[in-house]
Image 1 (cartoon, rainbow, N blue to C red):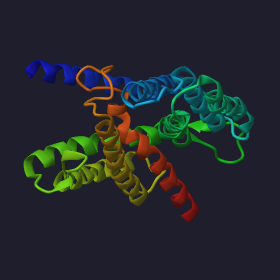
Image 2 (cartoon, rainbow, N blue to C red):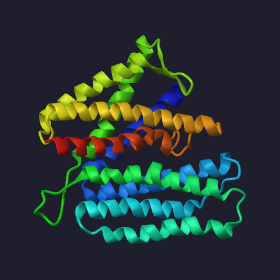
Image 3 (cartoon, rainbow, N blue to C red):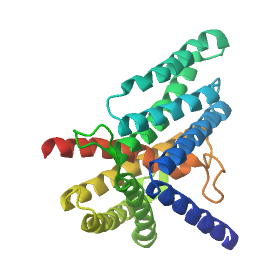
Image 4 (cartoon, rainbow, N blue to C red):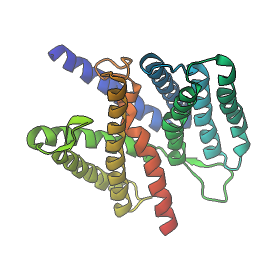
Length: 281
């Protein structure tokens, strides 16, 4: 058990260091890292459904290619607004994934289509939304500015929420949050995690004033709520296909979906929240 704890700790420190370093390192390292993460996560998802869902065989290679291309398209449009034509090849890849089922002679092409599209909507689109958070355009400029703080804040709130929820839940947790899907999560832990995330929002508001204190706190609560829902969503996926971890690429931490389950729902929710805030200002 001690060995497993040390392994988890080392992997966790490296994971956080690489993620923070790549985001803060600038648009090139940000793009390279999350393009790779998108590819690995979609491939892992494809492996899960191909192995554990009856009569399903999705095209993992083309699904990965499409997902990475979608991420890069959002990054390009985020950096240079008005260049939406870059999405055209992605449409061809989507058409290929649909039409190819006519020739593959699979038992259940409808399920193949469904899981293939899920890989794009659930994973590729969510990671692509990080570009919406990262690039900001003042209107008159032809090239946007890269701001690492908003995408980084999503991970900070998730990490603080997870840690706070674990500590408070271990000490005070009595009422199950969603026992059918995740027996260990409690309302007490979730509320505790949210409180710690609000404290993190106050700290970020002190150093980064492009959002007001209230907006930072609102963003933290959105990430907490939808990050928790994302965690539960991935837990439901694993329970449905009867697996414990989504993979083993991260020693002691499972797979890519295990590490980014909260992110996959928190990022689109954060984008929606910030659009609503911008319209109200």
